[in-house]
Length: 106
Image (cartoon, rainbow, N blue to C red; front, side):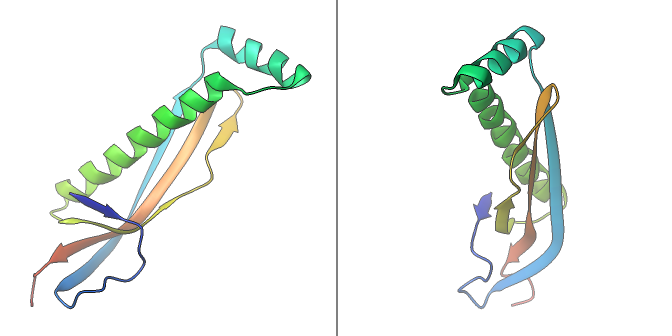
């Protein structure tokens, strides 16, 4: 399965399908959440949130790939990642793109 960030394919044998959207929300550990809020007061990297966003992003991309495969697409074109948002108690990631077929109807 291909996840491609280009908006337009550079091949004539690609047929573009529907828009696919995935939203992933990961909950934060309450103890680590409190520690990150304290770190926010004094400054520094918020490693817990970095790991949480990375995990949510990887899961969202895997879910997008699975959704495309479930609908019979060969991949997803124009993959975009919505700005990951740290919400109260977790993180939210939105990824989207158009499903595509290679060689269908060509």
